[in-house]
Image 1 (cartoon, helix red, strand yellow):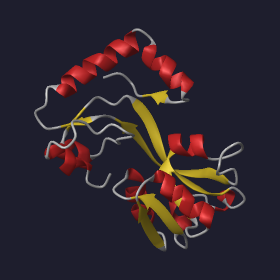
Image 2 (spheres, one colour):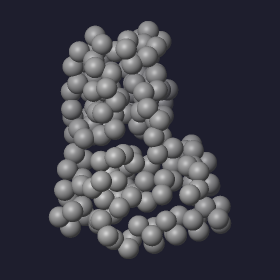
Image 3 (cartoon, one colour):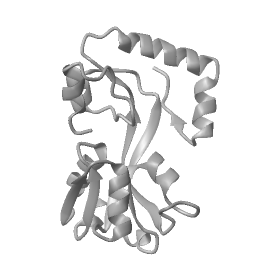
Image 4 (tube, one colour):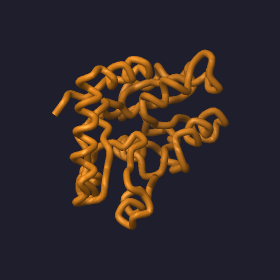
Amino acid sequence: WGKKFIELQDGNIDAVWNGMTITDEATTNSSVSNPYVLNKQVLVMKADKVADYKDAASLKDLTIAVENGSAGQSAAEDAEPKKVVPVQDQAAALLEVKAGTSDACIIDSTMAQAMTGEGTDYADLAAGIILTDEEYGVSFRKGSDLTAKFNEFMKELRKDGTLQKLADKYKLVLAEEK
């Protein structure tokens, strides 16, 4: 994930889509679609500890696992915890918390919702404070005609109700249409 824009520019991939947060880095290094879903970066930790942390300033004594190169890593670094532990992906960040090698992780709210709580492998973990609000988009190579085609495709899915049905199914909030 940390090399996504290099992979895109080198032609090894044609798009960056999987939970791609629209950031200045993304718009500088690629052609980004209109936003389609809203997301948040949230703190995830042992459920019995989550209420003890009210804001980013309260994280100063924690070791926090993050996906390397992610919006979660940026949010963690902004909070200035004791230590930030970059790992390969969000699943590995959750595993760090479950194993007790990190106090918490910062991951996408969609991932936290799907992976924590009753009935999951991480039943003793819960999402806490929201550190950032963000929008997801899709990145294509600079100058690609795929961005405009993708935006038109998503506009049609929104118009015929398909996008809202998918959002409802996966408990997502759609970004406003642009």
